[in-house]
Amino acid sequence: MTKHEDKNEQPPFKDANQEKLVPRAQFAHELIHEFTNMVTTVIGYSELALHAIEDSHPAREWLEKIRKHTRELGALLNKLIALKQSRSEKL
Image 1 (spheres, one colour):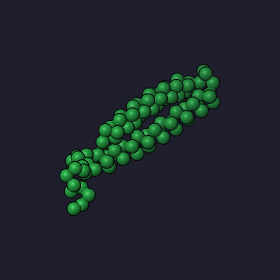
Image 2 (cartoon, rainbow, N blue to C red):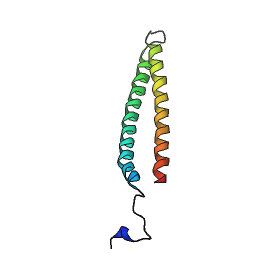
Image 3 (cartoon, rainbow, N blue to C red):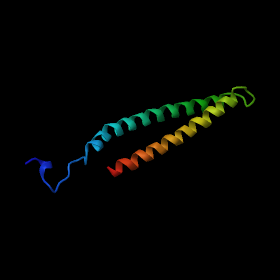
């Protein structure tokens, strides 16, 4: 008798759908990580550019918008990370 043939012990996955979630969860984790790296880079460069230009420079408004929206994207990615972690704890 194999390990999972014992009636009292459950297999590592309850059904085929859960088994498919593991590669998907890993892919989602890697994707979120890559997006987070890119967002961090954009925020960093926009901060550097804002420190390097005068307050009256015409590009300042655009750089501030870039910084604002990438920070919002970063917050959204953090929510996705929290959601992914809460789902993986349930498996």
